[in-house]
Image 1: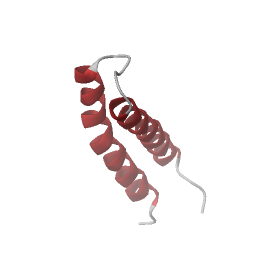
Image 2 (image 1 turned 180 degrees about the vertical axis):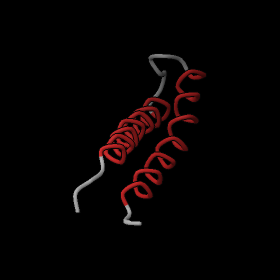
Image 3 (image 1 turned 90 degrees about the vertical axis):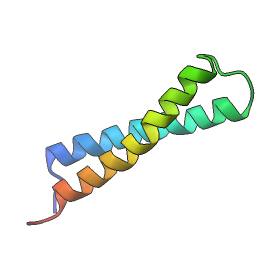
Length: 65
């Protein structure tokens, strides 16, 4: 079954947010973040649920009716 374009867009968004969250974890774990602790934590707090939500939306959009 081919992927629907909107589901692919949400899947790409989930990948980008997952990469951002991973980078924020490493930045916070290994010392002084480049953007500062507050901004990096903010990105992490936004990226984690955004990644999970985007992935769930992509899965729901691509399931057959």
